[in-house]
Amino acid sequence: MDTITLLGTATGLGLVAGFRLYATTLVLGLAVRLGWIDLAPQYSQLSVLASDWMLALSGLAFLLEFVADKIPWLDTLWDAVHAFIRPLGAALVAVSAAGSLNPAAQTALFLLAGGVAFTGHTAKAGTRVLANHSPEPVSNIVLSVTEDMLAGAGIWLAFAHPAIMLGVVLVFLAAFAWLSPKLIRLVRFQLAALAALLRSWTADSADVPAPGLLRAVAANGAAGLKNSIGSIVLHPDALEYSARRWFGERRYRIPFSSISEVAFRRRILVDELTLHCGRGEQHYYFFKDSRRANEEFFQAMVRAGCPVRDRKQRDWAPTGAQVRP
Image (cartoon, rainbow, N blue to C red; front, side):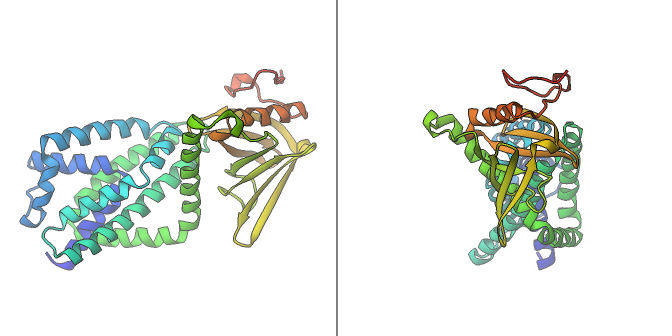
């Protein structure tokens, strides 16, 4: 196997498995089992994917991912859980596709494919967080179906035209390098939200923070602080969000007088505070380990005079909040 073919096939499978691990293993297994692909001797190790137990496992995992990946915020939770599973699985698939190599080459290829897979996972996970800012689920479904189709096309290209696939991988890596600061912030938010969700199941009630100061993430609106993990403070006449960036701490203040409507929603992974201001909607995410303090923060805003969005728009308003007619 020449170097271009090796790199194109291995990194191509790594990239595809980075955002669709179970689809990759299932399609490869079925392709081998049904004779869609005649494995060359150098790819013989991939035949393990065609075994009964591997097809059953891949099929079950694919069905779970197929459903979870199309539900807003459940897809983000799924991505957070798979932050390390996908790169590891992708690296193993890539090494299996490489055939017989010496240990040093196998290790290098394992690390390379794992790194490419991590960039694929990071790009997918970050894109999904951005899609979840949208109130409708259509964007999640469209993205998920597109990823399903790209996975199939990528697998075919990795075997049929590995040189072209290598070029695709290099272009993707260049784009990732340019967007990586934003994408890494999004994945950091995902992992922090998952950790907070796990803590919320075990934390003692005494550990709940005061509602006037909460850890939060600004999804949009806070100039220069988008998707940064920071804190949000409730003042008598305003909200203040602050977060650390490259050159120190930055603050963003929102007077209550500029807020025309406020809404609170419990999501699967986080709680969401939506503000309607003169500049449009602003979204802030509270972590689940704050628990009832998130709701109390919203109630304090209502008591301060912020109007609550009508229930007909399916936004949740807590007990005691005055809903505007």
